[in-house]
Each structure stands twice: as structure tokens, then as C-alpha cells.
Image (cartoon, rainbow, N blue to C red; front, side, top):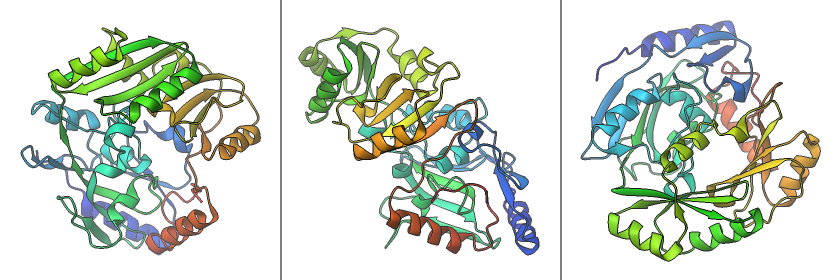
Amino acid sequence: MNGHDSTNDISTAVLAATVARAPLAIRGSGSKRFLTGDIKGTALDITGHRGIISYEPTELVLTARAGTPLGEIEAALTENNQMLAFEPPHFGAGATLGGTIACNLSGPRRPYAGSARDFVLGTRIVNGKGEILKFGGQVMKNVAGYDVSRLMAGSYGTLGVLLDVSLKILPKPAQEITLTFQMGGEEAIRTMNAWAGQPLPLSAACHLGDTLYVRLSGTDKGVRAAHIKLGGEQDTRGTAFWEELREHRLLFFAGEVPLWRLSVPAATPPLDLPGKWLLDWGGAQRWLRSSANEADIQHTANAAGGQANLFRSAGSAKPARASTEVAVRLARDLRLAFDPFAIFNPTLNLA
């Protein structure tokens, strides 16, 4: 499990950029570049900083360098019948652990198992002064006070260069099936929220077109009992469906029409916006293909108690930004503390 450790090289490059006040654009495989667009600055390639540092299957903990491909990590976990419970999308064959955590990307299992951020136990980073800092560790409840390591999830590289990440992992479920139900969007939202409040082994819920897809994961006995209770038709392509949803390979995601990601309370009724909808995360994450005015989309999401961001388009995308004045101020203060000379990904504005 030994890989290339270029920690000193990365730290030296950052220190030189700090002295010269020269911006750096942190680069991995490029699989998430559609989220940020082209970032100005000298490229700092971390793909060579790769390899699984330690993996303890009995302790359910894995530590790997940021440039390690997700595929390599998932292959090692599969050998021990374990998984990354937040089910991260790759969006490309070379997707890395660092890019996944930096973007805080999670798949269909997120509302039932937790987000990428929830599984981060510890990190090592290089800050904007070229210093190597370590936060957290390799066990749960190892931090007294604010859990700085989880700040890195969703920071898009604006707080520092991720070197290593320690993650909590989980066993794969003994049984997993997908059920389908024919119903409209409004009924699907009511149904998904009603089932979420019951002791059911739910691991994904999505509505597309006129079909509600529900995944059950757990023990053989628990899954069978839930199937009997819920009914529905078992989908033999269930595994492929959730993978295609996670990787945005469903027909819904094809085309040049802008793709918006809306985060709203799960029980929010259907939103009055033109376009095509896909409801994920039990209704809490909603994908919209629409050419509607950005201001209208933002206003509608805000009025529902949520927010919207342009996830992908023929032009550009925008990472999710802080949504309140307090969050904006906190984001700016954190960035100043970690990167006082604005070296990292300076053209990204998350505040």
C-alpha cells in the first residue's frame, strides 16, 4: 500500500508561491473541473501524491493520500466486503479522493448514511504559508472543540492543499434490492417523507418521470420484511440505476440545457419552475434541467427555505456558496486564517 509521498515537494511549491505572491490552481484528475471552471494560477498537480497509507478493516478506518484514485480505494474495500458509505460520484475515470472531499460530493445514500464530510476522521494539509498541519485522527470523537478536519470537505481547495485523508468506512449490506412504484412527483414527495420516518432499511429514494425508485439495504430478513410492507415491483437493474444516477449517466442528465442543483427541505411540495425534474435524497436534493432565469430559480429555492446552484452548463458552473450573512463572514474569515495571501484557487468565490 505504499505510494508516492510528495509532501515536501508540495509544501516547497506552496512556500515558493507564498513568497512570490503567485496564485496556485490545485489540480487533480480534472473530473470535477466543470464545477469550478478554469482557475487562474500556476497548476499544482497532486495526482502524483497517491497511495493508501493504512487500512484497518477490523477498525473500519482507511487513510490515503489525496491523489489516490477512488477506484483504487474502492477496490481495496471491496476485497473486504466494505464500502465508502457516502457513495461518492466519480464523474470521471481518474477521480481522486482529494477532489471528492474538497467538493464534498456524496451519492444517493447520503441522507440515510451521511455525507462525505460526516465520514472524515482526520486530514493533513499544507496551508497558505507552506506549513504542514494535521487535524483529527483515525478514530471517532478524537477532537476537542471545533472539528477542523471536516472544514476541508466542501472548501474546493480554498483553505489548503489536502495531503492525506482518514475516513470511517462501513461493511457492505448483506442484501440490497430496488423497488419501483408508479406515481407523480407530489405523491412521491409525500411517500418518500412518510417512509423516511419509519423504521425501514432505506438507502436511497429517487423520483424520475412517473416512477419512484426506492432502495432497501440491510439484513436479508430486514429487507424481505420491508419489501412485503411496502410492496412495489423489484427492479432487476437496480444496481445499474443507482450508479447511473450517481454518475449522471441517466438520459435526464444528457444535453446542453443548464443543470441546476436545488437543496430544499425534503417535504417541500413541487416547485413552480419550468423544466424537467429529478428528485433525489428523498426530495431534499432536486435536479432541474431548465433555461429559466437564474434570479427566478434562486428566488424560488430561497423562498422554499433552500438554495440553488448551477451545477453544469455549456458555459460555466458555480460551486455552492454560503447562504447567510453570518456564513459569508465565517467563510471569509476562515479563508483569511488558512490562506492569508490568497494563494489557493483565488478565483473561486464561495462567500
